[in-house]
Image (tube, rainbow, N blue to C red; front, top):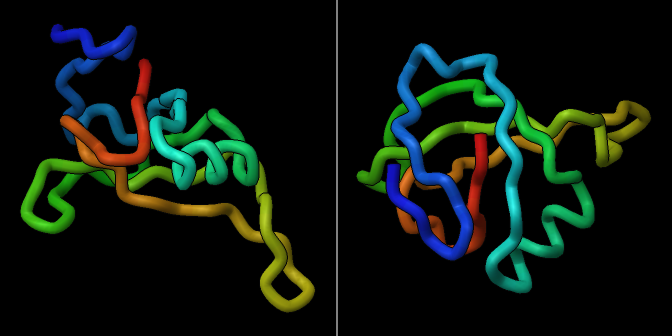
Length: 89
């Protein structure tokens, strides 16, 4: 386990699909996304994003409207050195 400014950077594997993680914004963009969609996210998939190990996350709550339907937000977060987010188990 490494630590970066208080973040626990632990190995995430396919066995962690369905596990909840907390996100914390590092940048203005990241902080805005946390304000919009919350800090609790579920791991939907572990794969690669732009050639780097990453996890696909889905927001806990339905936080934006698409037509008449409320939707969850989804996003890729890098397992190491994500530019916008710190994540915690």
